[in-house]
Image (cartoon, rainbow, N blue to C red; front, side, top):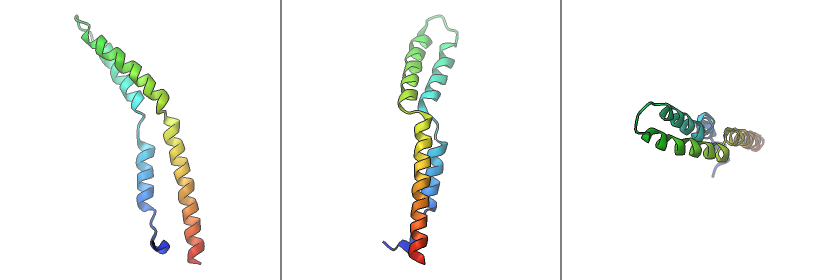
Length: 91
């Protein structure tokens, strides 16, 4: 691979997508709470909403927003290191 042709634009684009990704647990919890508060006489919405809320809380603990931020921070550091290496090779 020719290091002079290394282009990190696609990596930066991918990094931006990762940073803008939402936490799946928060969305699932919000949808669960919305369904939970829908009034209906049979209680089916409550039977659907409660597991959604619990699953959302589990996912929020497992895949939290800090993890996504950490990935972005480390990727930026890696891109910076690669850019420094590329500029030193080009000298």
